[in-house]
Amino acid sequence: MTNTSLSQRTRIAAPEIKPEGATAVLVLSDGSVLWGMGVGAEGSSVGEVCFNTSITGYQEILTDPSYAGQIVTFTFPHIGNVGTNTEDVESVRPSARGLVLRGDITSPANWRSRENLDAWLKKNNLIGISGIDTRALTIRIRDLGAPNGVVAHAADGKFDLDKLREQAVNWPGLEGMDLAKQVSCSKSYAWGEGLWQQKAAQQKFHVVAVDYGAKQNILRCLVDAGCRVTVVPATATAEEIFTLNPDGVFLSNGPGDPAATGIYAVPVIQAIIERGLPLFGICLGHQLLALAIGGKTAKMKLGHRGANQPVKDLQTGKIEITSQNHGFEVLPETLPASAEVTHISLFDNSNEGLRLKDKPAFSVQYHPEASPGPHDSHYLFRRFVEMMANASVISGQRLEKKILAGGKI
Image (cartoon, rainbow, N blue to C red; front, side, top):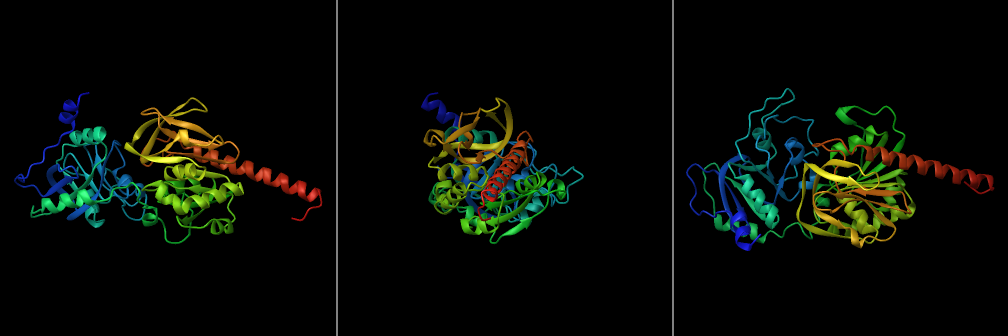
């Protein structure tokens, strides 16, 4: 593709004159100005403009803490068609900074709906714009990378474009930004709810989940797999985790640059690995595990966001359709010999999973809990439980040998 054709495919007009009736605008850091109709709350919000290809689960997406710092462009045109409810949320409050839609919010037609999406957006102070050519915007993001931008909504249609451009240009971007502390819990708590609000009958293992921005459905999946879950803040120390006497430790998903979060997270993860506790990481947790063993991460040009992402399990040869949301990746060539790549993306061959050969630890880049998305990867929670069961057997055998040898317990 020539530079000229690339420019033609990705250029977005920058009209200074507001179309009649426009009540919202999206201003990108390259100067592009896109006019539309406002949805949700009034005001303005700055962030990285990305896109998500899921055809379901807009409420889960907007409440996923991993979207902190981002304005989400929905490529699916029918947003609002199932309304909103109190069950389909992934955190106490939305973390996304705004949303971009092609059409008007669709009227809800679903028996689980409790509130129209527009009312829910207003209640949660989320700012959105509709009437945007989301196909053109998506092509621009795909070809040139995710830009910074400002979405603004004003009922009177009055905007200071120069000020909005300045905001977009001056926002520092996600690279180098630690957002985990912003979305993490402030104190430890017990989580006991399983999938569809059912409490698991047997909770054989105690898992400490480090909350870097954990989705609630991950916690539900852990409970459903037979785990008693204690959630701790992102800044919890290794000593605080060990005091809880866990059978395993889970490293959650979350937003921001893993290298920034790793400043305080990596020493804790290294101590957990050294202790030999079974360890399972998802998304940001995957990236932090890689950093803890000496690997490196990098900002992706595009990132993966959607519920239709194909991943190959290199150990079984099977293909999983996965749910993903990440803008950083693990660089497999930087991993030590003690680590093995277990999964790769069939979109771009980027790393999607790893395991340690000498320790009970593994992680994946994608979201096996789905919500939204397919359930192809739920087996990973069972794998974590099996790992804790094996560790328990080995620990018991060591204890028995020590007793037989006359050692102190």
